[in-house]
Length: 297
Image 1 (cartoon, helix red, strand yellow):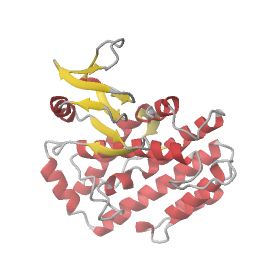
Image 2 (cartoon, rainbow, N blue to C red; image 1 turned 180 degrees about the vertical axis):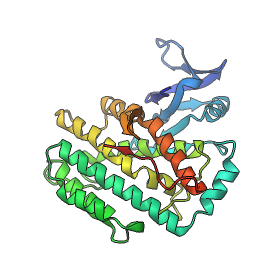
Image 3 (tube, rainbow, N blue to C red; image 1 turned 120 degrees about the vertical axis):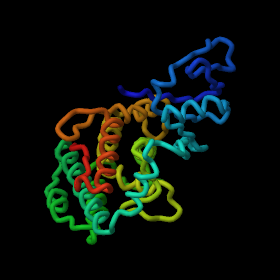
């Protein structure tokens, strides 16, 4: 079942009644709305005048619904997740924390190879030359000691968007703003899936910044980034204004969890594919597998 994503961009009061999310608005012309909590996968809270009850937060967490709040620039800035996301969480975290360095390097090698391969396929879909990316994907060694991931990313973005002065930078010109928003949603999807698989999102296989609470999420989401890039590319190509994140653009980007991807030869919504990826990662930590399942672009 595909979980729903709800976006709240205006003042509202969110509470719960009979396992339903109840939405009330200050505007008297708007009627009360109810949605089954079991149908919800993600809730994005943007307006600063939103009030949400503790009872609703508790039910959302028990349903493993990711609650995302936004900053003054309307970008996702925080993620509300459960302390316990899996019945075997303690054992699974034990295997994760005891993973050997050689295993982590091999897993990062797989991750980078898949990411670069997906970037190459995306460029090919747009009629761009991807021979260098294809070669770099084959040359990635254990741990990516030669940093092919960064080299490929620079080449990829230089050749993807036909926009004067564009380079991938969080504070750069559009469509960087769309990429920032899309990646933030993807990060939340990844963190939610990791918690559901009983893993710690903060302990990565490659990223290890002590100030980053989502190191493993940043690792695992890498091969999924080209799917966000493809959506942003299509939005930019429509000719609509992309210098400002309006409601229509956000609506498109909030559809990322439901995007169709191909994983292990089968079509699946991205949020379901991510759960398969994080579960396969646990199997690698456990020792029952040596391969992470990632989608092919």
